[in-house]
Image (cartoon, rainbow, N blue to C red):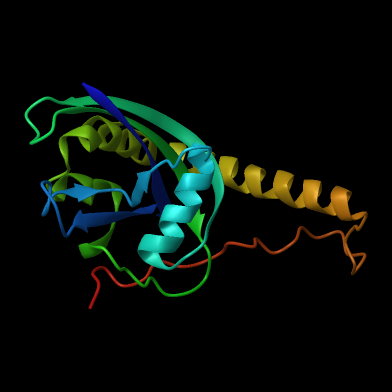
Length: 185
């Protein structure tokens, strides 16, 4: 059985998660997290960023590894094993410009089971729902904030620059955005 390696963006904004309904192929109509195949020589993180840009027209940032799914699709037209590297992340400001999905929805934790997820996503959704409902969302947000702060610190060190204003307050998050409407128009 062949193995397909993919990366998925679990885009979390204000404790809501972006879900995407497949608009094509054998699994059309099923719900998933945006993402796609990891190209040869590409890292899972790089694939996650590229796929979000290609599929949704947005930049994602503050990636934090969340879970790796291993799932077999033996009944698919061409059976395969899926290895899906999943990253919590945030969406940069700006509208979603979806190019591949039938629908997009921002789902609160209690709404995560309201859509028909693809089989490989079911275990992931349960884990995500548990984290969001048990208050781990604050921890996850903190992890993405820490990732962002580390990235800014590395960039500042690489460029030899500090805070140009001299202020002691933390920098505005580079990737602060609010969820779009519940469904795509």
